[in-house]
Image 1 (cartoon, rainbow, N blue to C red):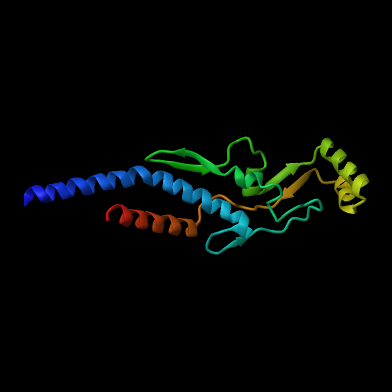
Image 2: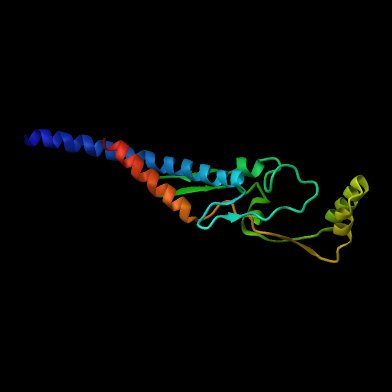
Length: 169
């Protein structure tokens, strides 16, 4: 009788260790999918939902924050270990942080030349106004797509419970 219980315990322990080994990667995949979904719904999924402000950029294609899809595709697992899971965007995407946190970017002479070129190409007053603006900075509103979220914590908790139940069956 005792030997049978020991066997059951050893099997249960092996299942639990397997669960612990797979869990960080499953959490990382859940995080990546959750953050990418923010682009599809047009805001940061949290309680309450934070919808992104519409862009006023006249050359805009697609929806807000999705022109080419590069930033969304750049969301990846950066580090996965038993103690730590890091999901984000590498340092090569220089626009992601300013969009996620909001802030100001300086208007450079090169940008003013670009605004004039766009004005001559399209005759859209927006570009002329941008070229002639006395401002020295452009205010970029926060359009958060990565960060802490109550909805995300709930999703992770449910996924862990589901995976643990599945592993210990």
